[in-house]
Image (cartoon, rainbow, N blue to C red; front, side):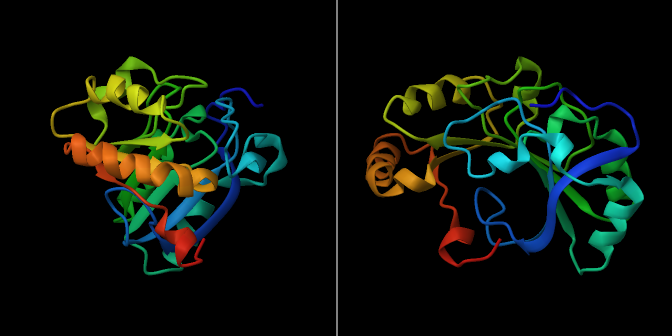
Amino acid sequence: MSEVQHNTGLLPVMEHFYTLQGEGFHQGRAAYFIRLGGCDVGCVWCDVKDSWDADKHPKFTIEQLVAEVKKTPAQLVVITGGEPLMHQLDDLTTALQSAGLETNIETSGAHALSGHWNWICLSPKKFKPPLPGILPHAGELKVVIFNSSDFDWAEKYAAQVSPSCKLYLQPEWDKSAQVTPLIVDYIRAHPKWQLSLQVHKYINVP
């Protein structure tokens, strides 16, 4: 697993593609995804473990990434990983926003916040919890439910984000048949939460 990457001017990119946002608050919107390599969180159920080693992936300049996005009609860019905050993202987000693009991030919050964001989706993980500094900035708290103990984990962070933060519970994909009914019952009992489904997996888009 890679250490934090600093201002080299290059970012390791596992993949980048134009699709629909499949989950959370912005579900259904057209979005250009940039998946950065490098992660030290180590979720056992991670569905992109190939992203963990940043050195495996080609390096892109910020100019190259902006040019790739501009080949599409995308208005929204989602930076994800891996754990994208292992990288210093101020320059990337400044360039994207200067090109008229909206910038969203999906992060565990396990590293210090960098970048300029229109929306922050915080998805805390037990394997490496988020730093307190990101909690007030989250527009969305999205907790993956793998087993019943994860509801207490979700409530721990729901109590720490801002009152305006949207709260989502999302079934871990491989256990969705077992945990989705538990989530439905939980949300009925705790209606501040909403259900997030990985719709992109149901409709078979990246």
